[in-house]
Image (cartoon, rainbow, N blue to C red; front, side):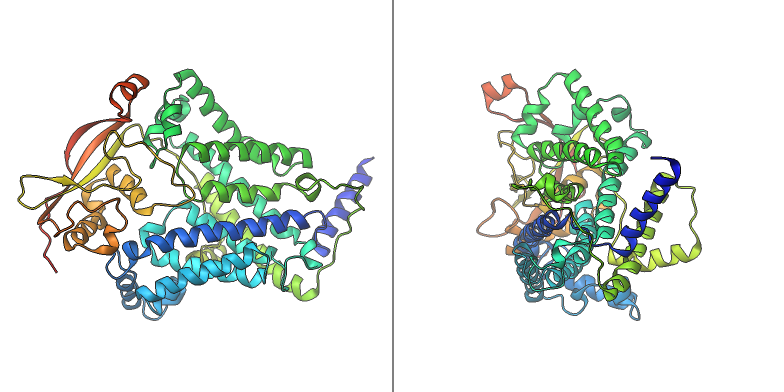
Length: 504
């Protein structure tokens, strides 16, 4: 094929991509993706529903109703544009439960392919409402990732009653490539920030020497991995950087290249899943990776398949999808280039649109574990009736007694335990919420106590509460065998003042 023929072939492909965006090679794969997103949404809504009273309920740590009132008073004329959440209408406990229940119902519909576009839009809007009202408890990168992937899901969903319709077998290739672009940004940015943060553990390939015991909620498998010799940790760190920095470029290559990217990225996510507790993050990443494959790779045909024929979508569909696809591409490019080239300035109109759309969370920047923590401080909350004898509050998932075996919580996302890990890394004055939680414990709040493993003061709340910070490390095989201790810890000192909460 000479140069002119190659140019003609490229032109035909471009015209096909623009004028006939319905891709017949991705129908079953996209259907699997949509159902997978339904499953992820279901996990997210149910996990949050179980915790919502203690986190943002009226007797919780950061009541959503109080936050909504603050938003209405602070930006009275543009509240719904700056904080597009239904919680501004009603922040009551009953309404929070209604949002979770409706979201779970929408997720079930999406999981079973019933009214897929409507159910996908419902899930996205309700989860956005909860993320905004959830404040710092729903500020994790996978909450944002679910919103961005969820927004794409709306436009990959058929508008009919069932996902098995004719048009469902021809999903819009524009949004398939936007989803692939999302996987690229998620992975490449995570590798990029590791090398540009200046963290010596990544440049020296020693990061995984610390990762397994310093991650937010370790597992018993992480304890086992921590026992590996240093050279294996160095090899593992090099492989992580290879997967995050090199394989994402394979996404834009041939089918074989995308298959290699799928294998490497999925393999990394599975290994993280098997050694850590990151809620639904790894499962969501795996679902997104499905769109790197075409039908015949994910669902090998039993008989010789017919040649696929691209579908020209209706004009109303093109008119709706084209501007949205362009908007998402431009906004995501702006955020990505700002992250990797901070000095690059985009035109002011683009920046204005980006600021206006930011509250809707339809695009974001990513970058996981840019700086590896090399120590594990933990906060233990204690109560006392007399100020002399102190008893610790046991938590369900975070490190506590040294003999407590690290457990798997995935796909459940224990948001209080996670947030306590972040609090221990910072000073008390930056974690006012922690002392609000301690005040709730002093009041004997059933909603907050339900987030803990047990209530050591069943008869009446303690008169005094304090937070003590400890330094934790994993034990070794010999210590575990002889003492049963999974952890070793050393007291650092008090974390903030002793509280004497007023009784209700």
